[in-house]
Amino acid sequence: MRGRQASFIVMHSRTGFRHILALILALGLVSGCAGGLGAPEKGRKAAPGVDTHGDAVDGLTVGHRLMASGEYELALKAYYRAAGNQGLTVDVLSALGSANLKLGRLGQAEQLLRRAVKADPAFAPAWNNLGVVLMETGQSGEAERVFRTAFALDNGDSQQIRENLRLALAKLENPGYDDENNTTFALVRRGSGEYQLLSTP
Image 1 (cartoon, rainbow, N blue to C red):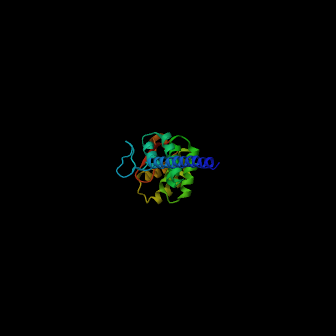
Image 2 (cartoon, rainbow, N blue to C red; image 1 turned 90 degrees about the vertical axis):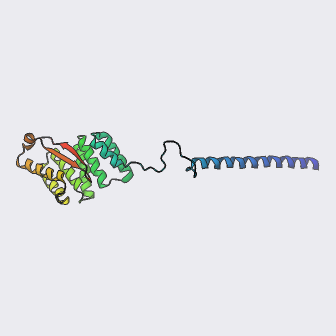
Image 3 (cartoon, helix red, strand yellow; image 1 turned 30 degrees about the vertical axis):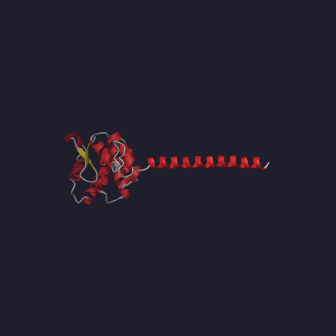
């Protein structure tokens, strides 16, 4: 009887040893895989074509380039991506308003640009672009006041804002000015960028 018990214990101890050994091997494999999924070790190269040090291109920058090339729908998507990454900053709101204006969505453009000037009352490009929307929707009186605000905030430095104010004043004095002179208003953004917009009569 004792011999049977002894052999039973030996068998179970061997089985337990095998289970422990299998568990150790499994853990070793998992840790090896985890190391393989991490960042490349020193001396190891990343996969071809993968830049591990590169930065993603800013959505605003992409949107501005698309706007300049006339791809307004794609620009709008890029600006929405910028909004997801940066939040609805005054630059993003102004850019969204400008893209919507280019797409003929004047109501949305006006709402976004009013939000932009409310978010930062000292941001001249948003005031200018709001003025352009107001001109497009026939609100010439308010547009002239908005362009004056943009002009004052910009200290008269922007040629586009100066010209927009001049055109708005001319239209107030002569409602038929657009038809006679093929009026062109300019949307502007922070920096030196601008987008041209043909005014509707």
